[in-house]
Image (cartoon, rainbow, N blue to C red; front, side, top):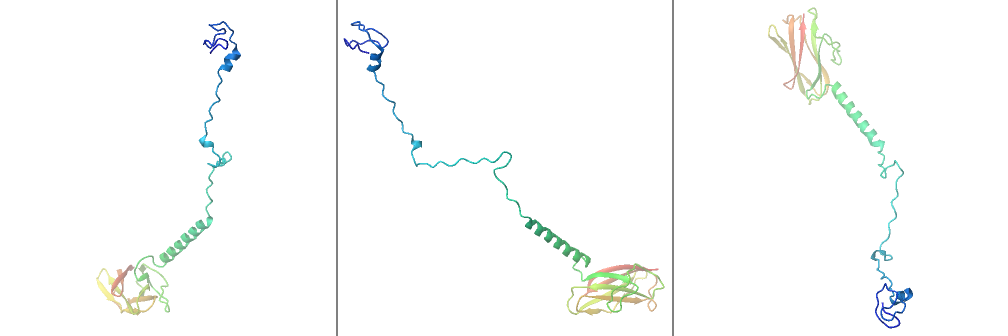
Length: 211
């Protein structure tokens, strides 16, 4: 700093002038140098209307997730259950009516008596007493074209004798029956096989025994 009396230059921390000895007061030291006010730096991030502040996120209560999955409708589950039950019902119906076979002979049995009107078997046997006069084979024929022919071929395995029945012609689903009369035939006791043909195609084979 400079002495206000003689103008000599002195160090900033001295109290007396080195040239004239005048007292250098602290007030003079402060007035000699005036500090400039600090520069105001523009804050580029505080310019008005430049950015809109977003509202703070709302926190979910403790123990609850922010995202709640929508509840699934029970209607779809009910429809699926109904569809499965319908499919099972269709499968059961097909099964009890002869299964998924492409054969035209859906059911066939050896019998000792049949219904004279419908040709359905009144019994189902595998072994036939030798005192039985007539043996029948009854068959349920389905899904045939008009005029389809059905034939039964009887085999006596021990003697290799064969009897071919007269063909039956049918136009719709129906029970049919064929028979052999043991009194008028040469078939003895023993093991037998019956083959059923629909339009010359082997559809079913049955076995039985006369004892």
